[in-house]
Length: 291
Picture 1 (tube, rainbow, N blue to C red):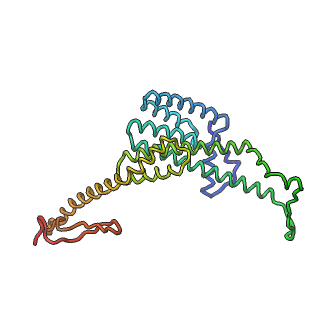
Picture 2: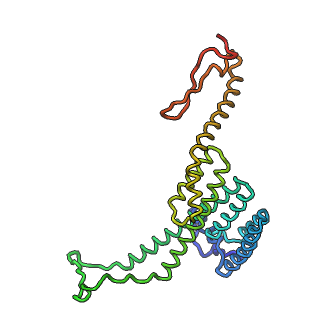
């Protein structure tokens, strides 16, 4: 059962954001219900993982979809893991667009999660700072008093990380791990799509991966190889698409110019080497045109 707020408990408001906040409350489950849903989602995920391992990728996608359907929609990390796994299935099936779509959803979810956790951390830090403020006289200068024995001793041993710090660091490592997997999968799919813009996007993902320190040696080799291979592929795809576009424009132009005794053959497309742009120049008589 979804936890909902009693409308009588809240004052009436004409603020649209208040309605949005109320809707957000309605989307959250009680801890007991959330635990049950997550357990059910993990059961589906485990079955999907087994299907993936056995090479039954279509069935694995169906099971991952079942896991997504029951997973609470505010658990961005759990959802990102599932979306990244779905992207891996689509890669195996060479369904590149679907792989890009699911990897992108995984990355968007991780970005949202990190923003929320950073805001929470900043809020917690701000609260602690406010609570720890002490009123002091403006003309008082505090001096650290150090005993003779302490002065001779080495630097103080830093305190061990608190359980909260350990948990936070583990969380960050988990997010980085799923992000690198999703980026690798999206970059591969974009590269396979092969369009000019797709290849540019793949290059951006691979460049981003070079800044991550959690890649395996095999993934690092793939990233380096792709960054070497992509530039010539991008230029080839760009020229091909420009040629195709020019061909379509010529067909359209010929239809428009024919009543005037003109042809697109009388126009030349000239590339500006400085800007990389193109312009049309009238070249006089041409095939099918009047003199």
